[in-house]
Length: 260
Image (tube, rainbow, N blue to C red; front, top):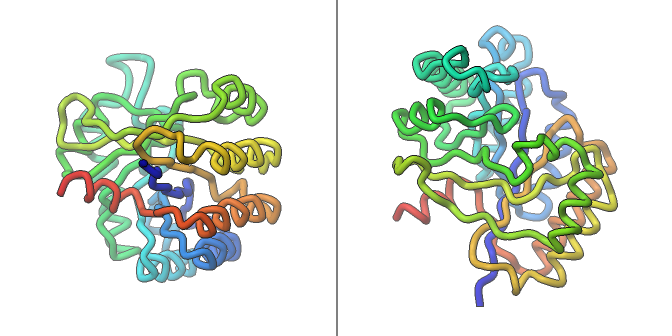
């Protein structure tokens, strides 16, 4: 009998993130012994100079067993993808942004990210090639509702989730036959703190965990949407994970397990 491994990720952390909000998230995560993957937007070195407290908190998080992943460079729309074909970002342009992002995270957080998540989940062949060239272990940008951007509309997600009567575990694969792994996102969680969606998701896990096919449950959230209500929803999820004795890993550990 297979019990899926659960990974919790959080996007959009950057040098201007409110330190108190980041500390509250990490306090909630640590309370339930959750190992999280935090996707960080590098932005610019000057912004880290002005917000050194965020870097301190993130370095402490690394020391506590959490993973830092790269989340684009400045998180602009179409930074890593475009529907305009040849007018979109080139391979060399994407590669340059990844290199600058890696350098900033190395300088400011003293870490070398092994995982990537594209801004707005916009992946392209040029992006995947560049990540592979930089020896990233994995990308985690694929999500079921990306094409219609419905992942940003909570009521539509609830309808989608309900009509599917649950969710399918994420399965890793090698896009374009690259060494790079793709670890898809299973479910957006706490976008705008929609309680009914969170309750539906938790109830499904409680009733159907043993029927989920082999794979991983990758739960994603965004730092700016986490109000006190959002943290309360997360606490309920983390308590469920702990009470059921479910395995929780960072995305990097999942990728490393797959490659060894």
